[in-house]
Image (tube, rainbow, N blue to C red):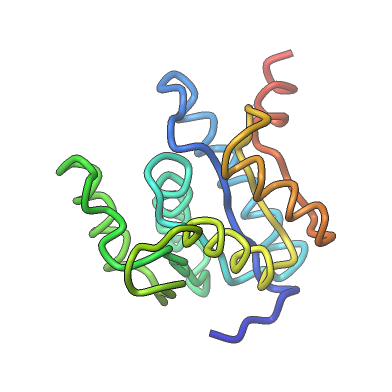
Length: 167
């Protein structure tokens, strides 16, 4: 559970993603993670295990292991059974990801107020890099991106990459 910050990247993004952009978001995650892997020797990738961007990032990283065998997927979870109110499909996606994770860190065992934000701060605190998908200036993702900038992480904003590619 002790990580070399210089070889660690966290992910943060919205729970709801535009269906028509899922392929582009996944492609941008793969491109940026590959860049960090090859240019900066990043090997530890931490995702928060939430529906939406977190699960998509984790699935993308699992797919990248075909080319980069030493990628480590770390799940930073706010509490046990955080998925209890999810749909069966989302739970199954999470369980498949959890089986492939190299490590799982629980911020707390039981749900309590603030555990999601503590999870987000943990991910930023142990990372040097952050890959985000943030299109709203409110909520947990926006808070986490601001916290990452405040803590001098190199932040890559996937939404900006996709917007520039479309222009």
